[in-house]
Image (tube, rainbow, N blue to C red; front, side, top):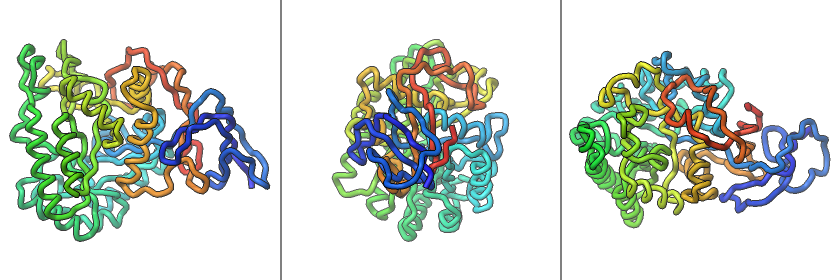
Length: 419
């Protein structure tokens, strides 16, 4: 057997109680040995990991990959390359493509494009309703059979409670997990958080109740139907409390928060900087701290909510600019900024970006353990992140001029080195 050896890296993996410096031997795509040399075989390649971290590959529960349908914003190749730069090995792609991911043909197209690109593995989220119109159920079972780990309606509204109930009942019957965004569109007629900053700037705000009222409805219906539920992209402290109460009441629910909502607040909008026009909106410092606490407590996953845009999409006045941030190129450096500031713990970060997401989408064999497929990133946490050259086609990166650290020196997906 011929091995790839990673020498002397610090292995960090809370799922396997790992925080140690050790050698790792990889062959046939899997971890063959940790901390000891295999009895037989020879070293084919060797990577010096001294002074670096070896962590499980990151898993993203929600990203917009732009393809098919939005070639001016990016492609699966460009966006997965950018994601690999931050250590992502698996990406759940949201279904708001063009055409919508509501057929097995579109699912197959996305999978083929990702395989051709050869970077992160893409797991398409199927549309819960036809065309994401929120009226008629999509062919949910066939989408899961085609390889969708879950179904989602992105941030598009479901027409009414009756349709939502039918979606949940069908999903519960067939054991399909639903990714739902808590967003009452009738209350979300604004472009930023409703607070003092919005008032001062004369911008229409979106109150927290646009999220919490919708979340309450979803949780009550999940309790009734017993569906496997994941709440995508929460943004406020009250949602954290509501999710805690739901779990205490026996509701099977998980949730994630976009990284941007852990790093920035609504005050970033000062100067009408359209880079910070995002959905869900950036909220108050109180909300940010509550979300960080939930991540550190192991209650939330962290998603990228990556949404690339061309320059023109962000050149309009703030309220008219297309919402979204291109975050794949800078996801890891921004997370390390939180860690360096003492606001986010390393183990909590790894759990929120690997262990929890893997459990949500039933991805087995994730983590640094002998016998598992080798999905991992070798990280130089102290190296300066050079964001002068972006891999993503998106120009809407919020931190291009920031001094950030954190570089992925090598990335392995199912044992293959892709970076």
